[in-house]
Image (cartoon, rainbow, N blue to C red):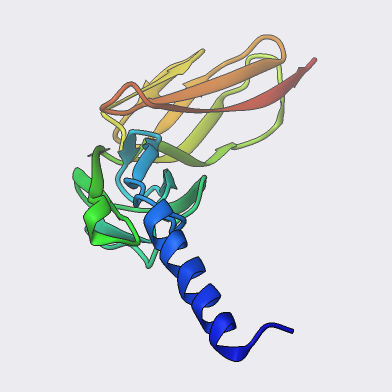
Amino acid sequence: MPPVGMVRNIAVAVTAIAAVSGCSHPAPKAEKPNITQFKANPAVLAAGISGKLCYGVENAARLELTPRVEDILPASERCIDIAPKATTVYTLTAFGADPAAGQDMKQVEVKVGPPPPRISDLKANSTQVRRGAMVRVCFKVQNAKSVDGKPGKLNRRTNCLTDYPKKTTTYRINAHGGDKEEDSGTVTVKVGP
């Protein structure tokens, strides 16, 4: 076994060689956060209807969404529910774990249009009549810019269609909205002898 003084000298020499040869590893460079996707589905919503805001990030330690919908966490792919009352620009900012890594930011606009048209309570005064008897098909409608129905004559003040069918007939009511949305409904009346 070598003398104690010699062991100390060897240890000092090894430490000095390690320092000179650069055996220490440099700290890894912080990676810049990256927003891989940020989109709305759909990009145009009718008022009162909800949609999805989807995002994906890499190398992010923290996310910030404005206007705030809910607290969001970094994920490679995630969607959250949104229901803006008016056209809104959402901004997503991704922050890295190290401030030196910087940040990434993206925006998406969600347009809000008028509510879609809706037909309800569509019914005929009778679903089986004699040939040539009067049929009245009435309904309720909301958010429609225009309404049409066939066959027969439509009265928009009463929202009833009148007809005198000679054979079994299917009546169709169409409600048209402001952004080409449409709702429709049908009712069939059987005609006997």
